[in-house]
Length: 87
Image: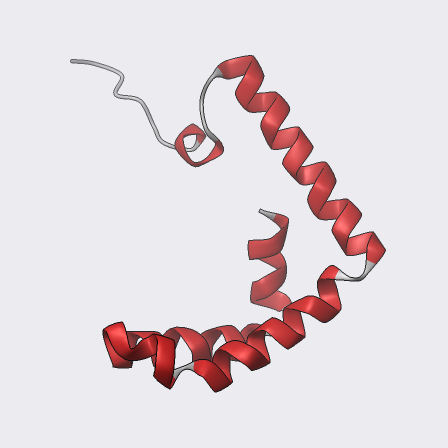
């Protein structure tokens, strides 16, 4: 979750948007036509993943999610869903 939240606030956001737009526009040919956008995005993300503080924050978030899953058996993406109160 840290990575997704960070991507929305980071300078890499425009690169993510450009890559997504290219992929949506080209379909299966995205492997060939979106190489430039993909390379730029990878370069930006690599810089941030090499930051030890950011890496540690992501690691702690992952460990927290993993422990919560082991405790409850419910995946993080399913925890926010509302259960019906009556049948």
